[in-house]
Amino acid sequence: MSGTLYGIGVGPGDPELITLKALRLLQAAPVIAWPAPPEGESLARKIAAPHITHNPKEIAIRMPLEVTQFPDRGVYDQAAIEIGAHLRAGQDVVALCEGDPFFYGSFMYLYDRVVDHHPVVVVPGVSSLMAAAAASGSPLASRNDMLSIIPAPLPEAALSAAINGADSAAIIKVGRHLGKVRRVLHELGLIGNAQYVEHATMPHESTRRLAEITEDAAPYFSMILVHRRGTALR
Amino acid sequence: MSGTLYGIGVGPGDPELITLKALRLLQAAPVIAWPAPPEGESLARKIAAPHITHNPKEIAIRMPLEVTQFPDRGVYDQAAIEIGAHLRAGQDVVALCEGDPFFYGSFMYLYDRVVDHHPVVVVPGVSSLMAAAAASGSPLASRNDMLSIIPAPLPEAALSAAINGADSAAIIKVGRHLGKVRRVLHELGLIGNAQYVEHATMPHESTRRLAEITEDAAPYFSMILVHRRGTALR
Image 1 (spheres, rainbow over the protein chains, first blue to last red):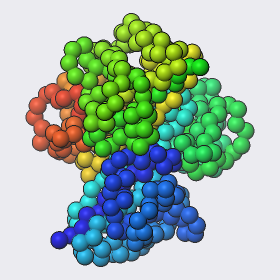
Image 2: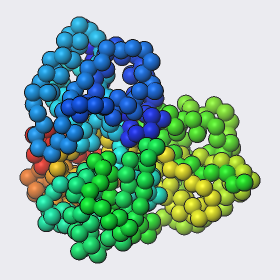
Image 3: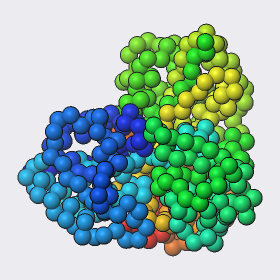
């Protein structure tokens, strides 16, 4: 009988923001898999680390951090083969996902390769989107607000149109696009409404008004929240 | 010394999708507060029920279920007075929120009335958005997709423009607007891409292709997910 692949959200950074369900599956898993950059530490593995005390078999899926084009198929093909062998042997495999598995996560590429051959269960997690809002002290959206999640790497005109069409915007993947985002928000007259959030729920969490930031680059795990009315509360 | 008001997300429905942090705060709270309809059961209270074993003082905040206009200020004014009395007496108060507190949640109105007078901490939770995606088996968005959360009560033209401007759309608060949403998606040629999700992560969870649904009304806790490319995977 086949094992099950579980894609579990481990939350945005604080290890205490994992769910009871994800924790139960993680701590029972004979095999865990996690995404990581080509060299060095996996953030998903680091978030889950305090909870991993049973010495499971571990599979690293190493890929470029900032996947803006189609991801390297070979990395996922290889991971699916390795994970598939455990599933065929009847072992469950738990794949760790930063935040939520289906919200811009790389887990979907593994999911796509396994779901036609083995049982797969996705366990939703706390997303960086909700973590950033909590950190900023600003509700994301209320009542009939349209809320758009907008990747900062988009071309300037598309970015501007997307922000302009929404009541509330969460601009993600800011990184080296910080200068462009600030310029667009300035042109739209929204710079004064924008909050910048870095490393939400992590020890080095930081929140500032975007207007106070002069740098042109930000960490990958940063987000800009902006509400057309200044707040969802009115 | 003042107590702290904690707004905790209890997740989308499955009691096991609460976070460790929310559980810890809930189980230590001398006072809990929860939103409820004018009569009957509170969904947030029901989700948290298996975890409430210590007999806290409970405060019900009763208000209309479907708040599309400004909420009844009196209800929140009264709740803030009652909760404020506990906080001034040095008691922490934990407010239960379905899903995430700052994602279209009513907690924000309580937050607004308390935050200038007492410490308030928002604990993000698993949102119905991520729960619906997991239930549907369809990733919400990938790479540079723009994802828009769109309330179904919007006028038909606004709904159409919002869906048409996004790569991926999550249409929330479907309820009696199901017929209108289906008509808009049909006109945009996207009906074949739309998934309907009801009561995600609850015992009566149900997922269907929207094209197979003929009813003109849906439960309040339903969502429609649609991706322009049919999937975020390609």
